[in-house]
Image (tube, rainbow, N blue to C red; front, side, top):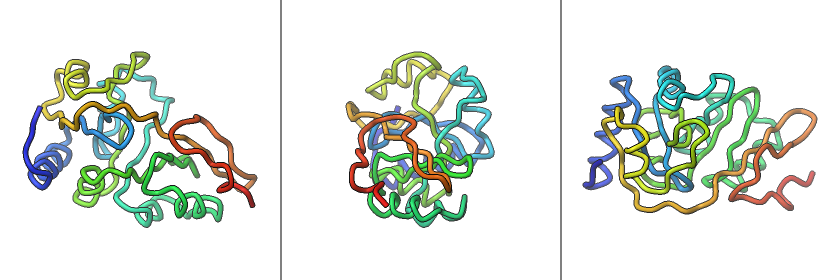
Length: 180
């Protein structure tokens, strides 16, 4: 576990990620187990999670999502209305989120998109503290303490040419936004 200024934390976490290791970071919703996308298999191994369950990609700014896929008009509307924030948008097989959390935004600015999943073993409750996340993942050398996190999980929606489906209800409500 570590403290210190944000720039130092970002530098340390970025070095860990670039070295191919996972880190635990706070987000605007829950603690996340994070790795660079090329090391996503590490997240599945650490979480003991089935590989058919997707992980989210966190980006620093909405425009960064456009490097991953070409947003449909509904996706653009959701990005403009809800990002940064607790909305994960799934399009073309990519689940992407731009968190409203300066540390994550700075880290994603430093290293690019970050593959992330909640910092819990598969099937276990999501830890609300850095200490609980560290206990779940004793082999992860860097756990950034963001205090006690009690926000609801992100809302997850899938956008296709046919429309929008809510995959998980969470922190963001979409009434009015998803209307054509």
